[in-house]
Image (cartoon, rainbow, N blue to C red; front, side, top):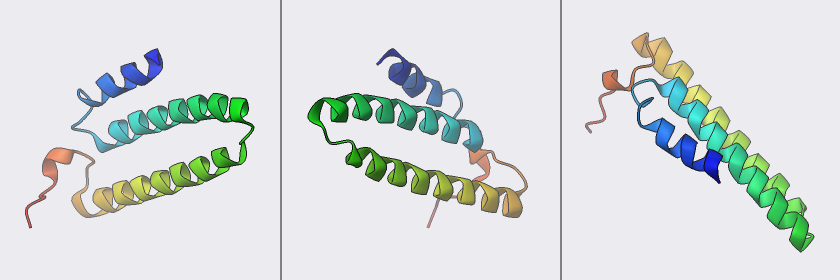
Length: 86
């Protein structure tokens, strides 16, 4: 639980760089896997962990794809250079 709170508070100072924010999100997901694994072991439902892992892998692939595209088009990973106005 302490590790989860530390990573939640570490996202804010790392906000300008997308790669550091993605790494913080991955640490949060690892903590969720650990908590879910302990909970599912008590309930004898370990197969739900595979579903959670699949979702986390999909989220990671999407995040890295967006990072690569942003670096390709913008040349840097700063979120300050993003224009989110539609």
